[in-house]
Amino acid sequence: PGQITPGSIISDACVTYSNLEELNTRVKPTIDDLIRNTDFFSHYRLPLYSKTCPFWNDDNGICGNYACAVSTIDDEKDIPLAWRADELSKLQGPKAEHPGKKAQKERPQRPLQGSLGEDVGESCVVEYDDECDERDYCVPEDESAGAKGVYVSLVQNPERFTGYGGESAKMVWDAIYRENCFNKASFPESAGLGMSSSNSMGPAAQDFRAVLQNVGRQQALTQTESSLAPMTTVEDECLEKRVFFRVVSGMHASISTHICWDYLNQTSGEWQHNLQCYEDRIHTHPERISNLYFNYALITRAISKIGPYLEDYTFCTGDPSQDNATKAKVAAVVQAALKQPEIFDESLMFKNGEGPSLKQEFKDNFRNISRIMDCVSCDKCRLWGKLQVNGYGSALKVLFEFDNQSGEIPVLSRTELVALFNLYGRLSSSVNAITKFREMLEAKTAAE
Ligand code: FAD
Image (cartoon, rainbow, N blue to C red; front, top):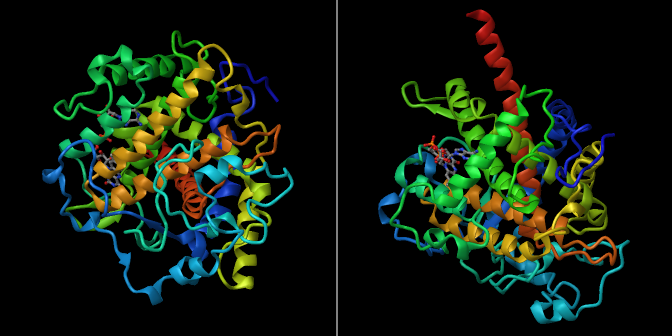
């Protein structure tokens, strides 16, 4: 195995695109099985309609396309047992009750060798506060029985092309990239999110684009053989800021990949793979591919790290055989993810230079991205946008708030767990789609 240097948190000698694609051939069947075939992981509850965009008025951005609509589960009897409100309240007890922020801080540290919650999984915890725990990277999606959340089947509402775009989507992406602006005071034009009048890319975002472009050139990517580690030669930007940008850009690249992979041909009315879309949005931007694979590595590491703590987790099915089946499927994903050790070394972050002082800002910026999701005016895109941001927030919590020394485990709610594993499923699909698109492109070039 190659060395992990401070500038490269992925070991460049060991992790290449082809390594990750090979890993993904083992991961994909297991993660697909988990997120498609278990009630717990195939459903989600979130405040999809009850929050308005806190940053600008987007009345004109409503997406009226049929493909933007989400089909929600409106009848309690159609909600799987694992997600029913009565099941949640039944499980509310001294152990499962949300400890509240004050109590959480006072709580003694849990032993390293334990489950997330003894007997009753933390997933059963009813969360009735909508504020952040200090360790959260996301604004929590309230899953309490009385909250204005909706239940959705993720399988019934796949992430794919919806036709959402134009100024509204551009404003959202623009706002998201502005969150790359650390030390906001030094960028008065883009401080905070009071930037609704401008639709153009902010200066901070442009800086990061420039950083990324440099990276792209230095990498001289040949997709399959390139390592994911580079960025060591980029000047002036510390590791933490680069990681932040890569996460955001990788998430964007993954969404674009799904749009191209599951594309509606508006002339024929057929869903198909759109190679031209892939070429335009992904293939000709190698840095986007690099960031997407980087995210795959990051989430693989988070899954491997949380995995052992899920062995005794109760998945709230109210049915022991379903619970065991879910556990076995989770274990299969974790086993597959563990096949690539030393994939990402999070211990190098927030350590040197300005790193420690950046942690709070990193968190705050990520929380802002989570709030920006309420500005996505296509319901289906908002559903998957919120879920994926929650998934990244959960992964960052696992990676950076999980103290290996003390053994303190961060509390992960059910929505966080479901988001994390579904995010892994999305990234796994993206890596698979990129592999296939590349083959299609090679075949096309050979035929010309
Ligand atoms: P966009 O993807 O809108 O990109 C805007 C600009 O950002 C580009 O011009 C480029 O300069 C830059 N950019 C693009 N990709 C990257 C990258 N990876 N890294 C860095 N910079 C980049 N549409 C759907 O059809 N289905 C969905 O499920 C869906 N989900 C969405 C979720 C969210 C949160 C958002 C904000 C939008 C979503 N959209 C979805 C819309 C979609 O992402 C695009 O905005 C839309 O298809 C228009 O694409 P575009 O080619 O104009 O560029």
